[in-house]
Image 1: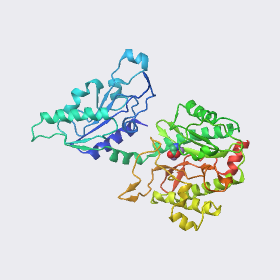
Image 2 (image 1 turned 180 degrees about the vertical axis):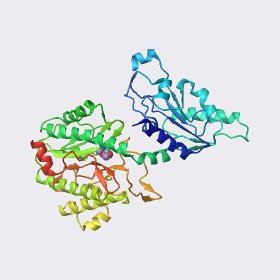
Image 3 (image 1 turned 90 degrees about the vertical axis):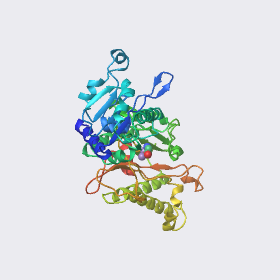
Image 4 (image 1 turned 180 degrees about the horizontal axis):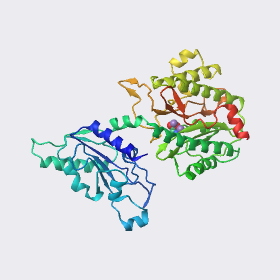
Length: 433
Ligand code: GLY
Ligand code: MN
Ligand code: MN
């Protein structure tokens, strides 16, 4: 994103916080994987959203109205010896020049400087509970200030979570962000196409996962989450990430994989037959899920309720399962009783952005919120018939999900992940080529 984008976001947070406030946001911590080996560092999405800065050991402090500078970053100083091992750092000058900070200080000086910034502020915007070590330090700084201020003076008395306001901002994507999610989805689509075409009965699930990772890494992207490659009944395990079974010749394969590119996630699921041809039963279930997804997407436009696509999908699935005799009784009653949940136990989607399950409220004042232009979310109905389900044997072990990434536009919506075939014919054609 252009530097003005981050500057604009910080301004919005400051105007929401007000002149008597201070906003304090630490970067993500480095996490140890094994002894002295760390996991690859991933910046906290909130921190990235307001800075674009991707180093650890940093704290963003916004002090609205402060004469000597409102936008401050505590960060790692340059250190030639450490940089020789771990790579270059932006340092103090970089924080000002590349990241648009009004001022920057070495992170090691934070104990000395931060209490003085808290001094004349009454409200502290900070989200407690994400980094208990940092919370502890912040409470110490606040106590230090309180103990030095006479009872009549100002001091930071009120803690307010930053989450709500910041996450409302993050929920609405501007054009640049929608394009970023679209690029991420385009890349994930390439990975799905590659894996679908590479699939052969007898392969291991992890071999298909490797096809996905190949496309992500060669584009300097990461998977946004552990890819799911579930063959046969593994497709019925919602969070299956073991990916270690052999793919059978009559299996469906469910792949749920998305990229994280330039910070933005995509999240796509396709289900296809390992052999390249759906069986009658597989096709019947697939068509129901496809019809459910189509019905859900058709409803999406500004002003529609967040719940409406889920309701459309659940109704379509209920009718389809009643037709096949997998649910019994009147479809309206089955829907009202939520009988479909036996085979469709999850919701139809979630916000998508910097996080794959992105932030933002789904309900406002107890009601499903209205969709608005700039919201981006997944539409991912599924039908899963576990191997021990009390149904005719021919249906057992079939699991199908179809998931696309949808942006709400002024007139309706746009499918950002439509490059991967969705219909039975298009899938069979792609696999045969
Ligand atoms: N891949 C996680 C999800 O579909 O929500
Ligand atoms: Mn998914
Ligand atoms: Mn999803």
